[in-house]
Amino acid sequence: MFEPWVRRVRGAEQGREIKAGLQILRTLSPLGPYFPDFLTPPEGALGLKPAIDAIRATPRSRLRRELQLLSASAPLPGWVHSLAAGDAELLENLGDALAAYHRVAIEPHSDCIDAAMELDRAHRSRVLLDSGVEGLLLSMRPLMRWRPPVLEVHYDIDRDLRLGGRGLLLVPSYFCRRVPMALADPGLRPTLVYPVNHDYVWKCPPAASRSSDRALATLLGSTRAAVLMAVGNGATTTELAHRLGTSLSSVSRHTGVLRDAGLISTCREGVAVLHTKTPLGAALLGSGALTASRSAG
Image (tube, rainbow, N blue to C red; front, side):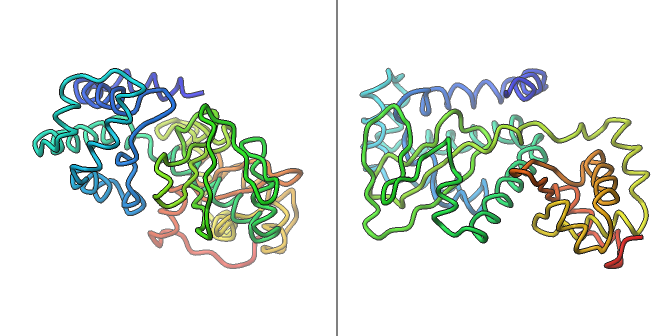
């Protein structure tokens, strides 16, 4: 599933930065039942820099506690013991290595990742609006099963996480594999990280392809601009036809061109087809480069 990403990362020129970050991640976040919660601070919702700043500011007592838990399930090199003791220089280097790894291995592919996130967000939002929280939880099959009042998730560790009146934060993840994951510390905000639909992964067209250039050239015109604007936060083909007062076949033709140009992403939602803007499509609209009427000829 991630082979295209692996090939691109292996072909990157900044191999040293990738290896340094990968060595740290393999050590602190191994494939196994546990990895420290301090690596996924809530400040990450504000961006990479606030997340790394929060990691660097992790209290020594928390570092020691969580890295001791990690040592119970995975052998650790000596530098991790110094990190657990609160070595300030190691914490600084950890932040630098994570930032460098993100810059080389993740940031160049942000268009694909962001488009997949937007598709998942649009799909979940529509289900929530149409069917409420019950419908949203039921729609999470087969990743999880909603058996009121319990949400069941298959994982390597048998545990119960009781909300006690707290809300549950659902976080889609591009690189999460197989099953959802929760934070290990039950005292933290209840959070469930789940994989996005694998149909969304690596579906964006190559940015520099000739077909993309041709599609962008054919995009110019008020009709397709109107379709792109009408997509909004996500719309099905039928909804677009209704919003624009045109036929389904006309909408399908125009969305095909928009998709080939990398301006929208498309996924099937039951019997319907859901369209969402990609970051490129949103940026094009935000630039003021397009003006469109509400009608499509």
